[in-house]
Length: 298
Image (cartoon, rainbow, N blue to C red; front, side, top):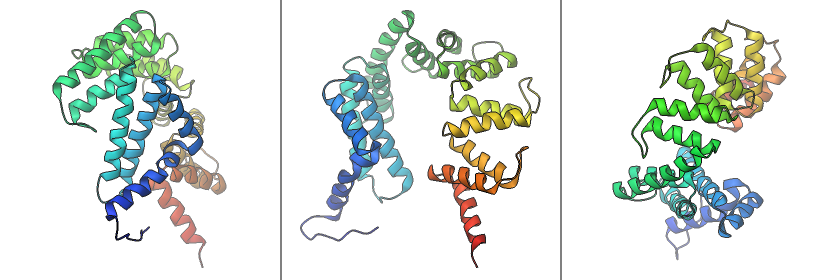
């Protein structure tokens, strides 16, 4: 797409105005974004953190697309994100505090500043520990992650597994998957394939995409004490695709299109799932669709 040059304004300004015009629509849909922004402006800390995350996601999307030859628009969006992360963090939102810690550590949307990074990590950990000890499952999971990566606390995989376990037993899907990973790799707990599978299945039953992928892999190739079983692999693959997991959609499209993985050949279903994956940017699915349309030509 090209834009007419206005002699009264530099091209970079016109580009910026164009992106400003579409930002509200592109981020989350006009209505959803307006509602989220209204909540954020009324002081809702969770909405502020979510709005900031939307800005970050959009900035990353633009960078990946390569639409712009410069970073003007992503930088603008990152700065907007930092504004709302600060608003949320100042109200005690742990996710926002962690993001600020990481941002100052890596210079994302702000200048690198180790002192500010340490400050926000410390704030996040203080709040997380208090909430985790009171039984908050999200805080338990987040605290476990902090120990895994050494963010604001010394790296300690045993404590990661401990807090994952606390949250997992309360039914927190991300923690269940995390505990499965702990048992699979022996991070802070002895390796135990049966326990890894148990917790992956718990998370998969709640639709958690990473856990669904683990079960698909287990049944397709065998592993963790699970024998190859294409029927079960297909079951979990469909679940993952239905939950929007792009890799599963592409793989399911391929399985239907070619009649592989124990699937009955069905090109219509194959094209359906290829389109789902292609819409999310999957290159393999896009190439498969291009090839399909080429073969339909004269």
